[in-house]
Image (cartoon, rainbow, N blue to C red; front, side, top):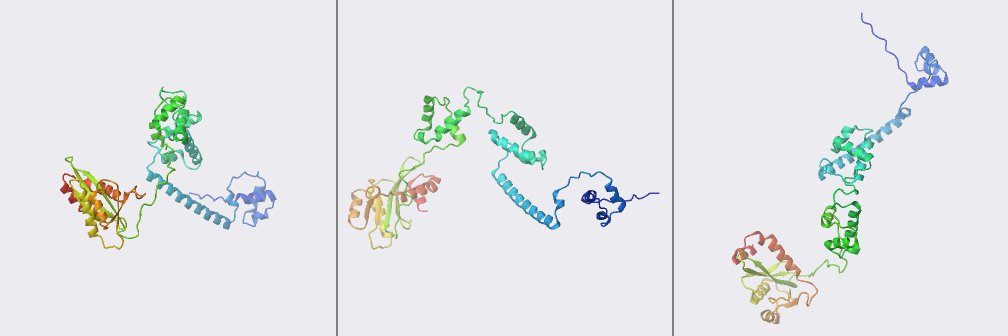
Length: 364
């Protein structure tokens, strides 16, 4: 016949401690503890109980601490997700990457030691994507103070640089005192000074990303070029040469308005003749809207812009001419920038076999 065991009552250790300390049985009996049980507590040696300090807090204090811990967990979770997203987007992983600097390895080992109190080592290594053999190899080399992948001494090959030599090269490359010396001549200077005798300078500069301190100080580059306030106030004219597949050349003349950036007239010719400049200027005058002041034509001092035919047109009073960098401090860069865009983003994407093809592509 089966018998049921009587369940054993368990009481809070703090109640037993109070009874043993005060020897007052009524404290326990008032809470429903049998008198015989409370009397048995007096005859026993007090037990050492390890408990959390939160058990001494009130319910309101525990509720407040739980809310604070929840907020902290949410914050840490958000930061962890942000760090993981940044790590995944960068594509960095320790699986196929080397850490030659011993300080980086020491930083990772210390972080693993702190996290091992809460997370198993196997899980940490899986998260870092570091094999156990690699991790324990770092641990052994840490005890031997040899976490750096390249020891400075002794040399393993005759042409291998030591760390002091690499530091000396970095100081000379990045020093403002040697910014006027080319990198190749800087290597020869280091040999003459007895600082470094090897010469893989270009490779070291490329690997470490060292920048020569050649920041331009004087003169300051102009930020804003020539600007007008209305259309037909100033025009830019220039000629560019386009080489064809058979070796011949095509000459493209154009006039652009400074204010509207509009191409007023253009002409493609197979010969370099001054009459083409006159023809383009006359076409631009007819295409432009009538204006009270006479338009000013900004041109360079090339023979296509300074000749008898163009001078005769200027003397009629239809246009005024200014020579860039001669009568004006500004350059003719606006139409030159348009040449660059037209060639590299349009013409050079096609097979330029004849002047007719160039004329057809320009007239798009």
